[in-house]
Image (tube, rainbow, N blue to C red; front, side, top):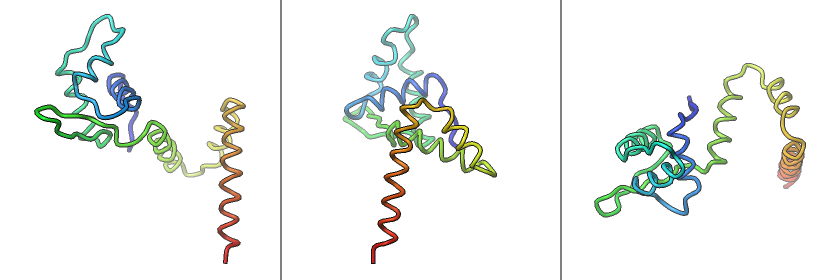
Amino acid sequence: MMAEFGPLEQAIMEALWTANGPLLIRELLDQINRGRDKPLAYTTVQTVTDRLARKGFVTRRPVGIAIAYTAVASREEHVVAVMLEALANLPERGPALARFAESVDPDDAQRLLDALTYRSSDINEKREAP
């Protein structure tokens, strides 16, 4: 089951998601400690990042004597996986989907409707193709 991230895990994932490439622990530490009253230790960030790697959320790649970390999935892909897993665990998805549709911001609802309309037309075109 895909659990929610703890606060430090979330901060690490946010840093990796917004990075232009792999990050070393020192780079993660700099980003995470920016604006903090009490800076975190290098080993704390390293331990939590390694734990995220063991859980399959980040990859590790040697860069010289250091290790560079990259998110396995984009933020959007991760959110989709969490949402699909939550839906998969329901015996009846309809009420949750309806409640979700009622709860989202009107602009998001329009984007969702547009995406579903596009998907529906794409599915219909594939069905009609010989």
